[in-house]
Image (cartoon, rainbow, N blue to C red):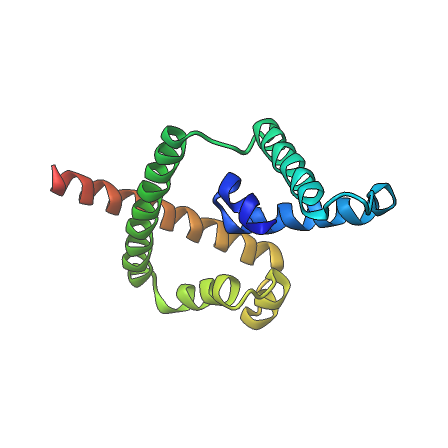
Length: 157
């Protein structure tokens, strides 16, 4: 049965799923099986029905993309990965420009995942004061990153 399904589907994982569904269907319909007739043709007919159901469901699936769309999505993903690595490089450069005390605060929050309350206790500041400082630091880093990226893109041109 598996060989028959594989000739119709080609993907072994899909074929295994279809085989499992066919076996389940055979089990459920065992009372309808006529022992006077050969079993294998009945089982293969059931498997073929499951393959047809698989393709019917596949056509309905909104997550099935054509090759052109998949290639376009891959190229977008590739460019975003490249953009992300450029942004990470710019962030490293910008973090080196931040004074050590502020880098420590950023590390507490983003590298160690500490809460604003915890950071406020450690720094002996109010929670609102820490929030304001973090907001200014993030804004400063964002502007620095944008400037770094702009200088990189203008140097490439």
